[in-house]
Length: 421
Image (cartoon, rainbow, N blue to C red; front, side, top):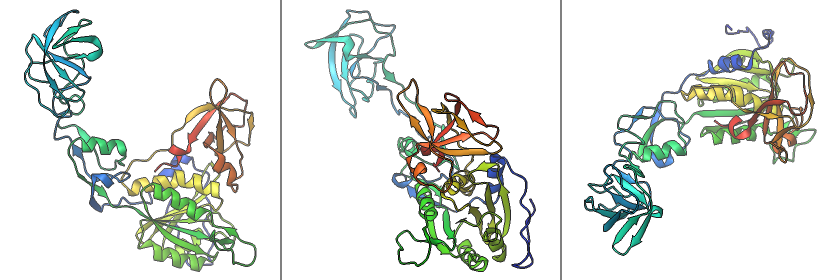
């Protein structure tokens, strides 16, 4: 959609487009973000959650030597050894030690991870051998090559271990540590500002305000999500429902952050100021009317050097919209690919009826005790927090879903994956 422009603060907001599929909305949101190219070098020890900025290839084989995969006896099996074969025990090799060569009539006591001595090609499990003084007798026949980890069988030299855009976790850190890598080049942390708008809001610990008010739940909720993603969170505070004041706050945050997120005011009512404020601040905007429930209205755009995302004010709507649109924008800023969260199918615990037409995400809990876990829908009100807190994840009902009997399978997204960076 072309950039919308208004000549004054009283000009009308452009009409909302027809409903977009969720995947298309994610792509439109991501297009507003520009990848951050700045990098820094960090110790591998502290690299968990960071996004790799360069390709890393193996410079050494892993394992770097042939080694025992079991506690037992290292032997030269040749074409194989028969049950009852008697071998003298010529030595003992623990992990980190180098043993002497093994001849065809001998066996070396060896432990898991120890280097295979010269001449040996096989390890006999200790359970398959009987120790008799300074000799060992095979309790079963042995094929050559058993219970040996060969040099490079896990990682050969030259294998790609990491690439730009890879978010490092414990698995990747272990893999890189096995290469004697002590530091990695990563993208700098993305800076995201969170700004709440609304005359009714107050900080959770501010009980001094007169008149009807509600605690601001979205700002701390989003801060918790973003902190988990390894993002540098900037607290933009709260701003009243005034387009000029919101525009001033947006302009100030846009030059210090890569992404500015507001909650509230993303719809098209008289008190919804997101798009108007963005334009007053010199930004560009696009309203996304998504085929999504909760979270249909969202505003995306750019202001100054930052991408912009305007989320709905209801907590469940804000959570769902961030997990789809916000994660897509964050992934692009970090130079990572993005895709819709993928769940798995679970049968409904009870019948479910609803109005079709939009993809809907509902708090749901796994019910145990039957042949397999079933899914209990906890509620469909986007302003309620308790069902969200009690849920194990979100059920996803496709736009064509109107009703389903108990046992019908629907997609389920555990929070661990749906809220992941």
